[in-house]
Image (cartoon, rainbow, N blue to C red; front, side):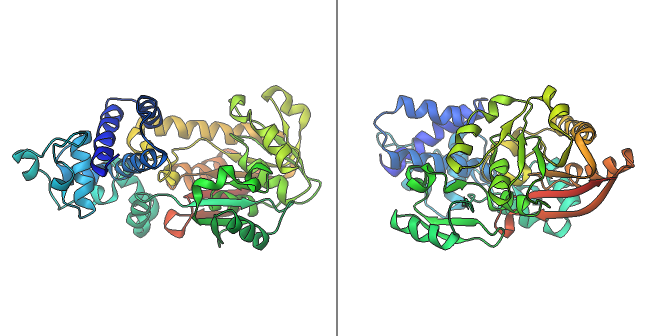
Length: 388
């Protein structure tokens, strides 16, 4: 495919997304209809689509509209490219620009447009992050780095870096966590790597790894990963200490691959239903990586910042509050409750912890941690609470 044909395909996909189709579904549907497209074509088109989703508001301003065509026009202008070299009207390329399109768009952006956020969310970023708000928002406009976690039970970081290099994958140590690597070249080869297949490495953001490293884990502890999802943090905890480790999720199907991943990593994790928790407990430590806005990881899932509403955020915050209150019953006296989000919003982080402390006199705050996208990780929050 020519570069112009790739842009035209991205325009068509973006129009489907604007009509309400999820991005991954729209991309998959296009790929199935377009068997002629090679892997490089699919990767380039995906990059176009996700680049627009991360920068939708500023690109709409530059391009003069919200259609796929206007958004890609804005993307080209933002990159300093000449749109008329792409909008040629040649076969498979976008139609030539009209006089109206050539005159449309503007370069002066208001602060929310510079941040590529809806107005109401930009206000939340400002109140939550203060003078770090714009840097955080603009970091979320960029493509996310690819991070790996080295399984400490299986290998050492320098050894893995060398082995990855032999497989055409260049990686360097990441400062956020001891076992974290950042891939700088060859990321598309990771899933076919023998190290990945053997459980020596896992794909996991360095900030997510840093959360696990910040937990007061020690061998012999009984630990519950209450909102386990796919189980990435369960596996990371199991790699650091000899634990009696249990994983639970409100939607158990999310954990369907966890037993196989644990076997591959040579660790043990027990999947647990809600009704079995009283018998399995009490626990020394419970990690609650709760459902959240995902505002710290919008580089990876940029649709989220356009789909999130104030009403939905309030619903999410109620779920977070309910979880904090519910899991206390499964903790031992003196046990640790670790509350985590991949959000940068204070209403999901500090304010939730403050409200929980006010509701429950048996909870005490030990410390809090923040990780922000401009520091090279996804945005995360962690509060360590103890139960008296």
